[in-house]
Length: 369
Image (cartoon, rainbow, N blue to C red; front, side, top):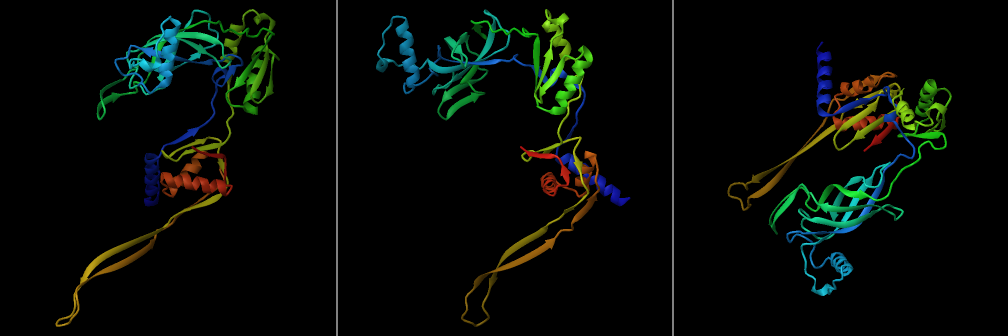
């Protein structure tokens, strides 16, 4: 009875010391593990100027701001000598945005504005008209507007208070889409699903689920893609067809994997992790060295002198080892039960799992993050 109570106490201690999560596959929607190929977002980026800053802009050493300001004024017919330009209420910034799929001209999107010079803050500034380009160089949107940083900076030098990051901010709906971005989905009578994680079994299960609902219209081209022929009665209603496919249930397959986070002591195990029969022993040698200083006095009527003497005491103690024999099992709970039985700490758990993997006793991929 006492032994059972001790093991239960060790198990409770381990649960409190480390976070262990059991991951297992469950029925989910196709929408959550796959997406329609071609339906994707695009990243946009542009370079611009923020004006109206209360002396918190770039310094005179920021040449890109000075050059950009001179070029901007030249476009309005104003000629300025760069050497005479002294404006700390202007900041050079990079503007980024994500262009969602199926947007049309006139739609608005959010933008993020980030200082690229030595500005202290872009709070309260106004972004001037900035073209946003995609990777192919085409302009898809134009951004402009007042910046919201959600932070502030006050004071200078050592007497300065700061909250959040005032050198980066956002403009909600700050960019207007200039080019329609649409894709003729299913124009050739076929659509493809792209799996979030390529897997032969999951691709086959998705194919079977779709064929069970609509006949023999789907086939897995590879572990990461399922091609679907759109039925004739859905050719003019692709959106409804895709929506119905996304709601179909499927059980994704997952590989046996143990993920370990050494920084936090978190261990995540898949429910399909199996182990072979093995024995685990935990124990160690504890060595302690004590040093004490004492005064050595000479004998009476002698010519000796007092001296400081170091006394070193070494104690070596081997802790009692804890051993447990774990039989072959298909339940991941037995793995944790074995670690609990030896009273393993989070660090010990990681070492034991690594040793089990090296010995070939655990059948799973061990990933350390």
